[in-house]
Image 1 (cartoon, one colour):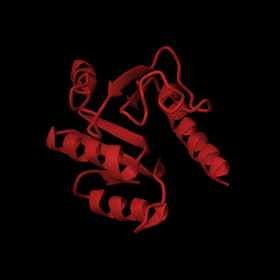
Image 2 (image 1 turned 30 degrees about the horizontal axis):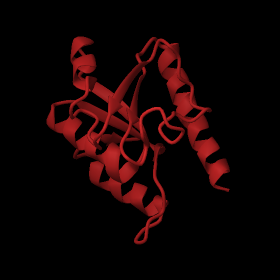
Image 3 (image 1 turned 180 degrees about the horizontal axis):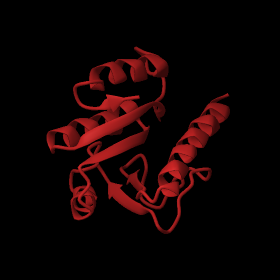
Length: 145
């Protein structure tokens, strides 16, 4: 069941990526590594189903904040981007932190509601976590559509 949900999630992300490429927009992937996801390990790798090309930028990060000690802000600034759309995982860590920091750096941020994901925890289901964060982001830190 988890594999089927992951496949559906990645298919939706790939459709969004294709829509960006179709109109010539840049796609930037952010890849996390830490002690639980060591660099160059199987757990660190992007999912096989994810549509990544050599034309895409890849930002490597070690904190939930995709801006902290990375080149993400340089990529956005060098290309004169004032906004970005974010998708991926994990809602309550990397996605939430990056949205809030990006907002405070002055970026306008968009989030498609079915393109962020997480896992159930001891307190809430993944669906509840996503719904909670989207409620907080909407109109404050990002535009959720």
